[in-house]
Image 1 (cartoon, rainbow, N blue to C red):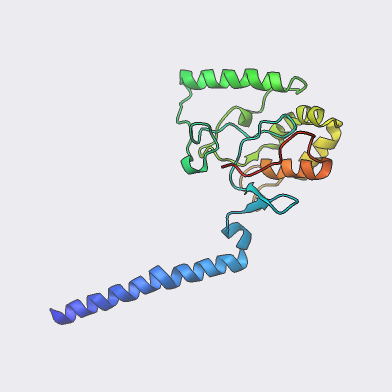
Image 2 (tube, one colour; image 1 turned 90 degrees about the vertical axis):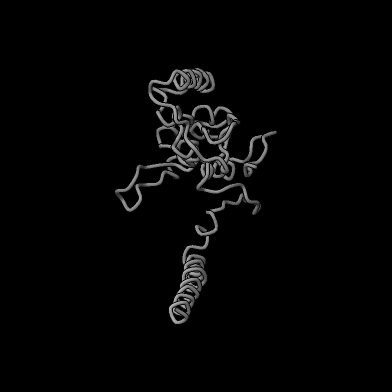
Length: 204
C-alpha cells in the first residue's frame, strides 16, 4: 500500500510540474518571442504612443467623421469585452425585427448620400458582439458621410479604405475585411483629427 501511494504521489508531482509549470512557461515564452504583439492582445497605439484599443475587439464610434463598427449585443450598451455575446434573437423575433428597422432608419438618416442597399453587417450583430472588422462594402458604404464630416472628396477617403482591405487568411479562409479601429486611426493620421473631435481611445 505504501509503495502504491508513493508511486501515485511521484506521478502527481511530476505531472503537476510538467503540465502546470514547464509546459505553460515554454508556450508563453515561445509566444512572446515569435508572436509578441499578438500574444499580448494585438494592442494598438496612436501616433503619440497611447494605447487606443485592440485590433481584435470592436469599440463604438459615434462621430460622423469615423467609420462605424457593426452593431453589438455585448453588454447593456454593446461593445463590452467583459460580456461578449450575441443577441440570441432568432429570425422570427419581433424584438430583432424592431431593432433592425430602427437601425435602418438611423443609418439612412446618418448616411443620406450613401448609395445602394445597406450592407448586411451594418444591421447584424456578430456572435461575440466584438467583431472588429467590416466587409469592404460596409466600410465603403459609409465613405460619403465620413468625407463630408471631414471636408474631403470621397475619393480620398475611399482610397484609404481600399488600402486597408485585408484578404482572406491564407488566401482561402474567411472573407475580405477592413479593421475599423485601424481604418479610423489611418484616417486621423492621413487627414488629421477634425476640429473639436476627441481622439480615438480605448473603450473603458
